[in-house]
Image (cartoon, rainbow, N blue to C red):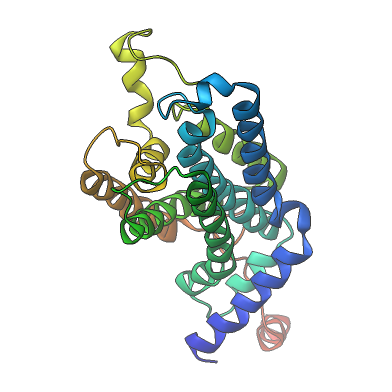
Length: 275
């Protein structure tokens, strides 16, 4: 079987598995929609804050909401299913075949890319409908940011999935990562500039998820990134390459670190007649 055929077949299998497990497959979409609803309600309950672009709850939070939805897709809908396959020994069986790690990993991405596209499209639709996008908004730049940021998050998720042993633990970690990214993005509870020390205010900027949310802001809501967007792209690309290469090298088929040896009938027969 050629690598291309194996890729298509594994992609179809991955899509069916994700759609079958609705709790895992649709959890990121639920989280994304729930956050949108919460901040929409904040906008209704705080009409005075909604009058200003600098205090509008949904406008401030929208880049982080999109980033959180993509983070959840990368971790909750990718890491957890892969670890569950390892836990059920499905990866060990695949490891006894000539299947390449890179082919298997790439086959997991298409359906997840669709989920990311849905969230970005909804987020951009909300921004246009609410009048958040300004003259500086650039759709091509937004798509580029989405592509680079998503690649970074999926590379990090695959790095975690490469050695995970427990689906339950991976699920807890994935939820913590997604919610932690939202809370540390600076828009979960917007704080007026100058109310915290410069050190505390700058700490979230060390997180790759904050780079992603900040890079989305100019084209999604007309906000300002804390540094030039091309520089944020470069930082995310470095993170993507490091995490992606490490994930492919460290990916394990089985819990023991390498595929279990599965002797053939001829081999067992040879052992039986050997004195």
